[in-house]
Length: 90
Image (cartoon, helix red, strand yellow):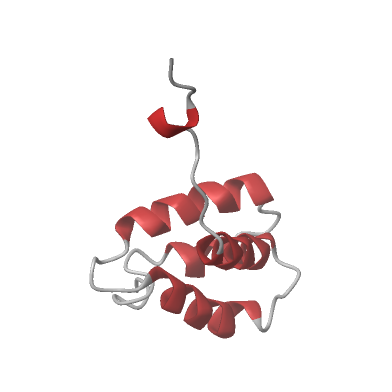
């Protein structure tokens, strides 16, 4: 069985919690794949909060829990990076 089609269509987050010895780097890679496979109708922040409640409550020290918490923090504080406006004009 895959994950919830609305929150985790490929079951990536569910499986990450099942992998013994998984690293934070591996969790970040899985998280990126999860984010790219999320349906366009699903709000990522809401999905992360639900997934954290579902899996993170029982495993707060798991690397995926931290990656998802970081994802929520990053979504709350977007910032502009580079681009043409950051360059000085002549």
